[in-house]
Length: 207
Image 1 (cartoon, helix red, strand yellow):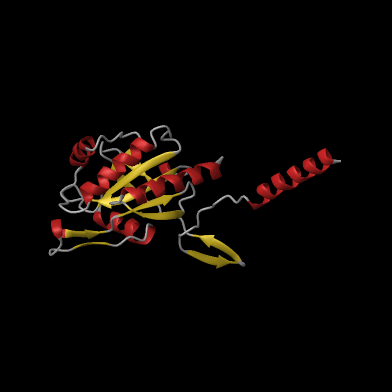
Image 2 (cartoon, rainbow, N blue to C red):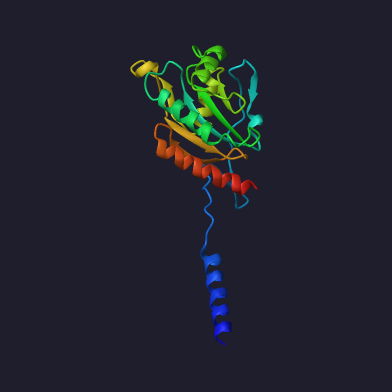
């Protein structure tokens, strides 16, 4: 009788643990509209730019992959070196995740000066693996359009700002459907650690 009671208690305990354990899911932060009572989220808009090797980079290359995006410029005297240092650290933290599942994407806000060769030199200085970490340039209007209307980040030329540009210091986590799942301060290690943890959640959700 005692064994039966003990067994029943163990079953109830394990059942309670199973039922109360919750899997954390990341919210979708993209804009949305309602169509026929369904919520339809707006993915990152299509873009076509050039990478550090002067090779065309089409946003369709991001489909089915998680990516982390930021906006910077190579001559930035302010937060950009810190952001790029943190992106380099994230690259190291995620080295076991193949480019087929994860890409890091850095867009320049100063395409007039940031040529592909300049971006490549900058990437090398931050130990970039160009298979996984892409540096993009192209027409300024295209970059700013996707930055402001796609990733919802502020950026603008400003002669009074350090280096002549104002831009966000955020890293943006985007899922394989092009939907934004998180924003993180790219200048703070603890925020990038949080990004890494959230990235693991997306990877588990995709399995």
